[in-house]
Image 1 (cartoon, helix red, strand yellow):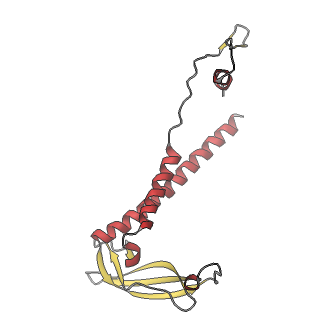
Image 2 (tube, helix red, strand yellow; image 1 turned 45 degrees about the horizontal axis):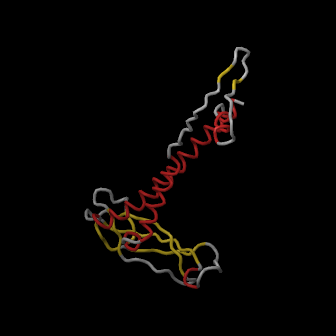
Length: 177
C-alpha cells in the first residue's frame, strides 16, 4: 500500500513539473516575441518555402496545406543566420514575410515579422502559461477538524459523541486518511 502512495506522489510531482514547464515555455515564447519587436533589429530575409503533408479539407481553401518556411538573414556583422517556422497556405502558395527580427547580442533568437508584431495570440500564450503554472502549483487547504479521534487503551478508536449529522461526522472519519 505504501508503494502505491509513493508512486502516486511521484506521478503527481512529475505531472506538476511537466505542465508547469509547458506553462513557462508558453510565457517565454510570447515574451521573447514581444521583446524582439521592442528591442530587436529588423533585417530583410530570403525565404524558401516547401509544402508538406496532405490537404486538410476541413479548412478554408487558403489554409488547406502546411508549409515549411526556412529563412536566412545577414546580421550587422555580416554573419548569415537562419530560422524556421511553419504556416498554413493554399495548394500553390503561402504568405511569407520579407523581414525578420533578431537580437543583436543573440542572433539565434529570431522570428519573422508577422510572428513578432504584437497580437492577441501573445496575450493568450502568457495567460494560458500563467494559468497552467497557477493550477498546478496552488496550495491545498488543510481541513481543520474540531473533533479529535483518540485511541482507547485497547487500541480502538474513541469517537466523540455526535448529536446530529453534519460535516463533523465526516471530519472524524476522514481525518485518518
